[in-house]
Structure formats: structure tokens, C-alpha cells
Image (cartoon, rainbow, N blue to C red; front, side, top):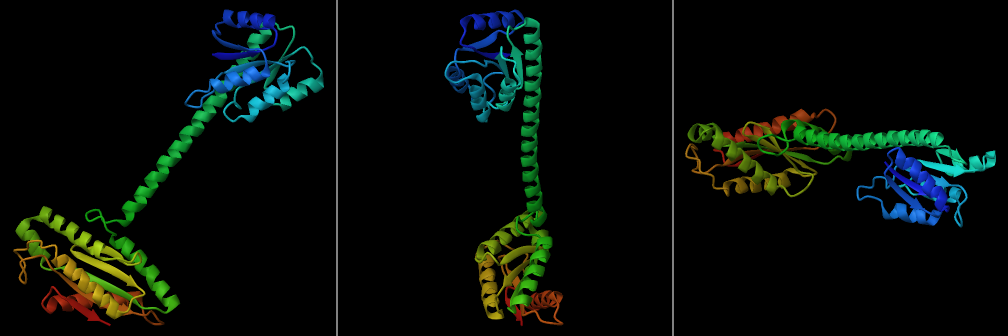
Length: 326
């Protein structure tokens, strides 16, 4: 245990040191003034910000800065505030003791010092220090655990909205965003467009290249679609299987069609071989575009159904094309 003795009397310091060393306190530092005590404390603060000493025995009557003021300055420093301070004084008047406790002292020792009393109060002070250290460690562990829990929750929230395979938004997140954008479009009386996308002859692709390669195809198409969408409000999602959807807020049918054509070209530019396609030797997509301005009697499901019919018409019309339903 580390002990700091502060007294301007060399005799008192030697006497205290002998008593403590006899009982196994072998890490003892002495200071002969309040200023020297503060200097030693500040100079010996460990890198991990733990306490530079475990307990301080501080004489009340010191030259210059007295014991009460020294104690007050120790307690004002958040790095030192938890160190138990025992005030040593021959003046046991109530006013003297009150000033010591108000300054932050945890106990006092009367002069002349009795070894038994000294050791008993030292044990009490050190027990207090252990409790404070234990509380600080628990608090630190709690803060760290809270931080880990927050990170875990953020990761869980992220995983809850992302498609595991492609890394883009999943159907659940699509439903959430679509409902929000429908509500916003209704409030602001603005158009909301929706693009449904289907990879052409994807079953044939899996049959030809295997499901592992099929998964890679889905990832590349999803990435191409995501990279093609520029506005942060436009949301690309994996709708299911080889189907994707793009929510295009505040956009009329003409603008949505232009976007859809850009998406189609982007996937075609991937030049992914597709020997199982009946229309092309590369992977292609069919897209259906629908638009609505929400009004009384019109449901969000009607826009989804319209986009679904549009992509069906695109496939029926030859695939690798954009079909629009206003």
C-alpha cells in the first residue's frame, strides 16, 4: 500500500514511518509542506490515471498552505479526489474538525498519535479506498458493457434491414420505407414512383451455372442497381428471389422511366454470361414502372400491384425492356 505522509516535523515523519513500516507499509513517501505534497502527487500519477497513493496522512498545522487548504486542493483535482485523507491534529475543537471534514478529509488522528489508533484508522481508510476503487471498476465495466451493447444493437438493427446475400435493403425495409414515402406523398400531394425489376430467366441461370454462381449473379446485379441510384431518397431493395424494387419519391412517371432505362443498361453493361437465356447471351433484366399521387380511396397496395403488372408486361413483351403503367 502506498502512503503519503505530510508534516513539517522531521521527528513526526520518522515516528509515523517507523510505526507504518513495522506493520508492513513499505511504500511510504514524505512531504514537508502542502505544496510539496501536491507536487509529489501530480508528478506520480500513473499513465492509467489510477491513484498515485492509497492514503494520505496530512498534518493540520503546516507552514504556508495549511492542512485544510491542502486537503481542499487535493479533493478539487478529479484525479486525486478519491484518495482518503486523514487529518492529523492536536487541536480537537469542533470548529477545527468541521473545517477538516468540509475540506474533504475522511477521518482525523489526534496528537500525540497512538500506534493502535493510527493503524486502526489506516485500515479503515484503506477499506474505504478499496470500496471506491471497486465502485470505479464496476462503473468502468458498466460503461464498457453499455458501449458493447450499443454497438451490438446497432449491428442488429443494420442486419434487420439488410438482405443477407446482397447487402442491400431487404423486403422488410422496403415495406417500411414505402409506407413512409406513401404517407409523405399523400401529405404533400406529390407523385411517388415504383420500379419492379426481375432478372430474366434466372431459373435457367441457376440450372446452367449452379446456385453458388447464381448467388454471385444476384450480388452483382444488386450492386449495379445500387450504384445507379444517385439520390439518397431513392431506395433499392431486394424484394424476393431474383426480384428487386426501387422506391422513387417525388418523381413522376417520365423521370421514373428514364431511371429504369438507366438501370437496365447498367445491368446489361455487366456482361454477365447467361447461356440459359432465351433472349440474350448476357444477363438482362425486365422492369415495370408505375406512378401515383396518393389521394382518398387510393391504397399503397394499388401502386405495388401496378408495378407488378408492369414488370409482367415487360416479360410478356420480350424481356430486357421497361414497361410503364401510369
